[in-house]
Image (tube, rainbow over the protein chains, first blue to last red):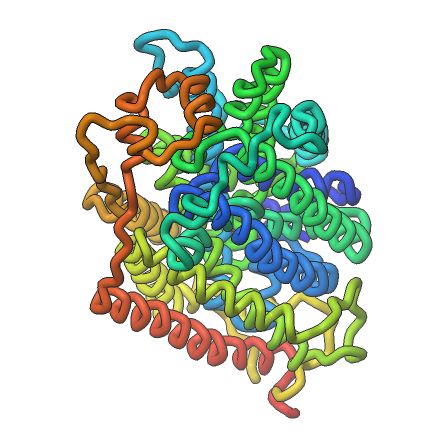
Length: 463
Length: 127
């Protein structure tokens, strides 16, 4: 339940429980699929085409661990804010505050990247001299914020349709280039040779982790819908795990087609690898289909990001970590409308001042900090509430192996980010440290202590 | 443990908090861009009078370059020869490790202290 407004006599209005597994899938895959239309290919720039394939699988392992861990914890902690609510119940308020900021940063900057992609793709297609992407950025961000303002079910139904169309386009492209007959259209053996497969050696493979994250970044966003799904214990694991399987297949198809059609140097710098792949088939139909699919994937992602960032910000307000003004739910549309509107100008501002590569990196940095938290969070969760002590919607297998794998891969990714963006990673971590000091020594005094623990669980073991 | 009653925050201070956060967000995201910290520099390893052979392109790759609008080797030269030159600045790496580790250590220690208050108020302080 949520408090509708700040003040002494709050009107209690809850978010609507209207979503099923299909909308959870649409939220997760909708946010992520754009990474297969652009972003993943920058890993080829940093390490070569083969490095992009290696990180596709290794980062796929990282995200499978994320999805398994997330499915267990979220199906048990079913509250808006996703990992924020998990941190609040398992680690503590300061961690929860930081996790919510990771979510807001990761999703807002991903939304910015999506809007830039929409604008740049339309400008590239138009080919009109003097046309800039600014108007397209603004229309994308404002239009999708309006859609989110009007209701979550409509927002995610739109996402389901456009995400499915964008995904089907990848499958159609794959089948159209006759992948069973190398040499006819695809020429993998001549594009990826022993001389150019790993141009920077294994250091390049590690460096490629940086943008390899983009294959799947955001699948964990399914948890943001926890409070709005009809059956969290069923819909969240089903939507998240099926989303991950969808993306793994899509990533493999994407790499195979793009690596077989483009020299690695070009693949590493293009903003539209799948659209370019459509062009290189020589079929105007495929080219136009991939142009529209690129737009749809970016719009679906931005749409999901606005949804998720607003839920995280809303949750901070509801728990008094930020002014409670942000925790208002719209009396008619049942959406966290003030949070949606507050984040709108921030997204717009960064859409105008950063470029795609930089916006992606901002998002990745916050994402990796969050995954590091998740690997430790699941260990603490199992220690404080061992199996059998509380009812879990889903229990992930092989614990603690996924948590260890996730942690190790996060450490490697920090190093990969260091190889190029080390100063930026340090600067952002300093920012999180400063706001943590602000929260712990100043803001926390406004928070009601016991009220933060809302799950009907027994006292954690060891307390 | 007695129930903790937080002070009411005046509306003006709420606005001040939000303003401080916005400024902090913009500084953290915008400053690295402004200072040129974002992105490693790539540099072009120049080849005079390049040919497709000197750029080590296979016939199939040449065919695709042409389809992509790069009519000859000279046109594709800057894209093909623009390379990363990875080097590890150990001082910068050490600073990053200290900052990230220090951040997480503070985060978990301070969170644990706050969490104990939450549990004591919710469940009482008996084990």
